[in-house]
Image 1: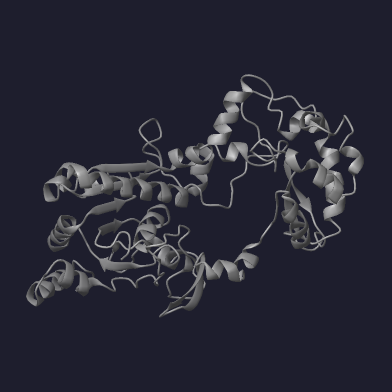
Image 2 (image 1 turned 180 degrees about the horizontal axis):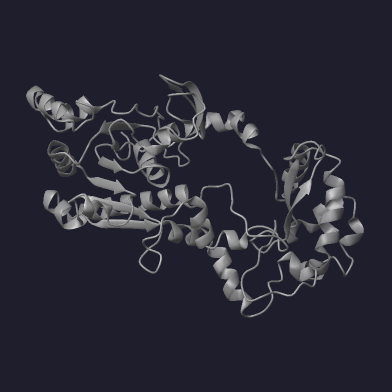
Length: 418
């Protein structure tokens, strides 16, 4: 039995943040019905296509294990179908602009009348405040959530990260909120509203930088490399390059082949308990007892020299060789893996973190699998649905409509072209 088997979710989401949330719930066994515009569907079906007239990888990788129904809710029949779907669902998830559901004629009060046990989950760009009506995309969320201001190098501009912490990160937050609300409903027998804003999600992921903002008010951040270089701190948490955020000095170092391979690097942390092992590995045993190097505090003003010395050693070895030598000694170290290397990693395929999917129109492609593993609820990743693929199945099997009613709905244009 799947963990969320029997839970019916009405997926009124599009692009990335909402579909990330509903896909995760679908992986855990929820029956997710994706509502889409007739003839168009989710905007990502046609965005960044690599094959003409075929659902893009953008769409397919965010909508596994779902069913698709096309519905024009501006028609009387389409609105009635939506009302019946709400009445049959446990959860409704949406990431429209603020007020869109109200304008469609489905405010929270009316949804509750249709189904007082339903959970209505929403993703917005911002929570209540001066920006709540602003349109938000991934990079805007990163910038307004503190990530960009604290990413990059001290002498350069703010940078966004390639990890989709604004969109996918918020979708993961919302999924937790939905599951929590479902758990509470078991006790209260009542539904509720669940919300997650993209700005809030990014701020939550930037908690260590908020930690450092408060520490900065008491004095300089000694683990930041700029402290060792004698560069004064300003009034806000600075960009820290590739410094480790955990208090142990760390840096990205070149490895053999770096001249031609942009990913021939390792991340290396000079953790205090293994300092002697590091010195032995790089043939600098004199540092072990030298007062200028023997303690973490004494090394702070020499971190540039220390990492340059370590890098002289790492440049003689591949990133994999460095890792193989460091790991047995307990020295924190990891290779910089490219997306190509990740896609070809057999161990990630064995665990289902990377999966190969067969699609009826595009053929085989790689996708991410479920990042969370449950021992009693294994995940089977199924292909994304074609647009409107499950129209008749949903009307017939879920809503119990007979053939005459289905024909009436089809002829009304509620599902698309008459």
